[in-house]
Length: 137
Image (cartoon, rainbow, N blue to C red):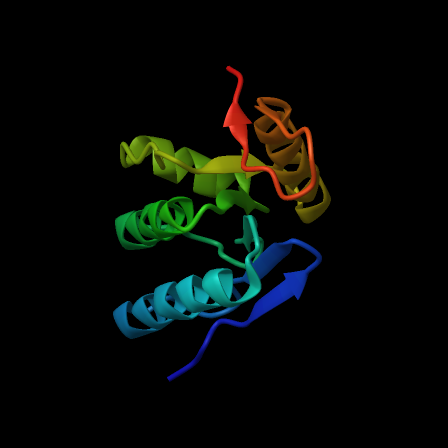
């Protein structure tokens, strides 16, 4: 069985899907990614689908599931590298990819995650080191 590599870049995990996604590969990716989020404490996941020529409902559901798992583990998910034909297919299939943000490339995805994290922490007031976050929204 092929495994999809999960690379750590700073506070972000990068997943570059270069293989056909079988059921077994998708389940293994979900497990590997969840374990890596917990082990590293990363707060962002970028899934690069540049190499995918077609995305069917199975891959769409797999991306949504990964985003949901990541969110529960306090990590934002951004899908990057989506080709126009893939975007059209997803819309035609009625797959909205709830919970998934998109960006044109990895660099923009990293910027999006950084901006999201900065915005998240702007809503907290930390007076002293070691203080617990107090939501000031």
